[in-house]
Length: 540
Image (cartoon, rainbow, N blue to C red):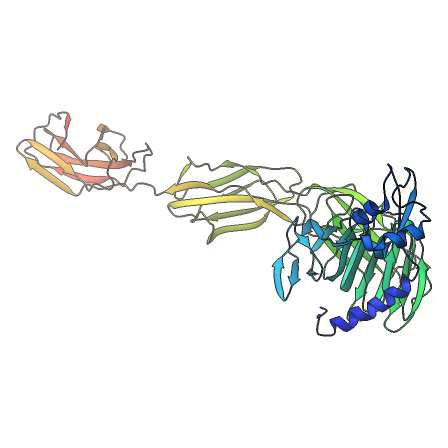
């Protein structure tokens, strides 16, 4: 990056002496009176009263007190009232800065830049500036620009603009003006000076190589180096190396053929090829949202005829590509619009849902609906909603489903993303919570109590709200069933049972209605003194 040191004053003085050579011919502002006037008013309005006699002599005015309507008046530019003007920032990409008296300030839209300011951009940053006469300049990435002169001549529309490109590149769209109006627009680099009126051209300066170049797209510009000047017409360019005269203007390379680039791109980033350009050693590639390329969202240089886009959101864009010849001159632009339709929509989840409860040792079946352009899927399951730790991370599933039966009881979250044919992944679907619960255990009778003629069987309660399915039979296969019931408490009671061996088993029913398996048959011995008449169950 160019460092603006104490040699600034000497450098500006050198440029000023050269600019005197470029502008040795006198410049005049000419206008026609729309109504009768006098020379005193004219001098007071546009110049200074001390010049009224010189203006009278220059224009052969016989009576300074009465000048007829329709009279043409010309005044030397140097006699006009000089007013300092500003440059307006109209668009930005990234975060360029402006430097004023060693203080750096972030650039912002509508900010006014003035004499003595330095504008600096970094990689993939650019700024569109508008001068007081409507001329515009796009300051590209990795550039540094010093505003040496920003002046206007009051009420005349004449401007005097001088900026110094210390490094980087600028695109210029200078508003056309008539030569007789005397407006002056000049860009200097440490090796060359470019002066123009009403034209479109680029200026590039490599501080490391001390090489300046300019390419003219409309009109013509005057380029000077080593005290020698060349006129560069439309569609031609020149290069100025340090201490050397400009090379003779040479034709710019024609626009490359972009017909092979698709209208719609379904991948982002994308890697696309276009037809190579004869005599091009590399290519300048720029992408913008507007066909005017007032700001650039991406800029790069490629040594091959390849367009490698950055990651772009879906939408419509314009690409501008030009070849670069062996002298470093950038050729004419080829522009093509294209649509990015690369957003991979996440699948729509089907199951499990937020109301799904799966039991342990059961198959957890994940299912989703395939979105457009899906070639594979990325499934993630976690026990935390932010997916910090992954229990399942299947990165390339080919079907829209996946089964698993090894998850222990817990609350889980799952999500799934779409992969396209190149393996690029889209966004994940919103997380869906689901629960895997334990299968309720089958309790065993832990206590038998005899109270009078009543017999009670008791077991341990597991969870509040559970119920129990109790069965008693004469055989272990429970073919000869004596009775069964569902109770809300962990016990059953009998008034009397005939003496003998019985078999009981219990299944637990969770509050959500899920019934676990019956436990193994458990033998219960009823003493011989019990009445053989079985009475209904009782609670304990």
